[in-house]
Length: 334
Ligand code: KG4
Ligand code: ZN
Image (cartoon, rainbow, N blue to C red):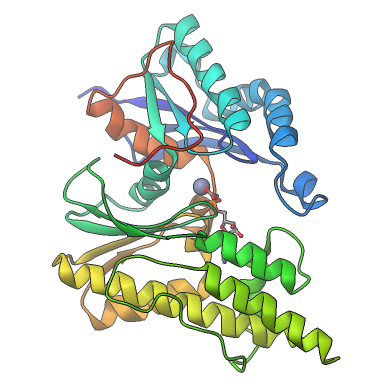
């Protein structure tokens, strides 16, 4: 069978990224141009600033990825593009670039859902084994997804309010840590003790999550300590917060694995980089004889390699976009 080379483009948030992926699993080249330092000065991603930088970066990133891959556009089979969900101004830059390239070089255009990308980041590690449960934990999503086969997604539960990454970033801000807070809380959590009493959020039999209560508990605790003239013990608060988050994510994931009689678990999204979560899931999977796949850190946060992996399976399934393809800020995974 002829090899399929996907040129993937990802610009849904503050990374301008392009990648060339062979047959859905082999990374030929990836370029990720992060705007993190620019947005850190604002304490979070500023959408208008992000889209302007995508415009400035997009042609440079394309040239670089082709150079690193030693390939020309003529050798590309199809172009995969993150059409949503994400920041609309950022998405539009990538979608317009993908449509332009598809038109000029007469290549099929393959729309990819951002979360499908996070899930298929695992295919760059090993072929996905079905049926599986995917725990998606990012800055915008916290979902439990059941996959019976390739490119079939059934959302069985998810957050009712804040996404887990969002909760990390807000908790970090309360602790006085700079953006992005998630990795910093994760690091601090290895240095502290679980001494602060925080609630285990939405501890019920559903597959849903709720992190706004936990976030409010951290804000109230910090406020009360300040009023009493007490210093917050940053590392202890980070440990206490992370322990509650990890405990509820692990508990509900195990519940889903058992209810769906599934022996394969994959983790996806930026928070999949979290050391505490990775270690708790490893233990849980070992104890329950579940096969666990977690992407390497570089494939956890936003990148185009994951879009190229998902794009291959979308391409195989005949998913195509045309020049009317539009970016979507919100869109359920289906
Ligand atoms: O998947 P991602 O790169 O972007 C979205 O699609 O949202 O996820 C970014 C999120 C941010 O909230 C960031 O703080 C969080 O992932 N994150 C972490 C860690 N690394 C990134 N959260 C906790 N621990 C980490 N090690
Ligand atoms: Zn993402």
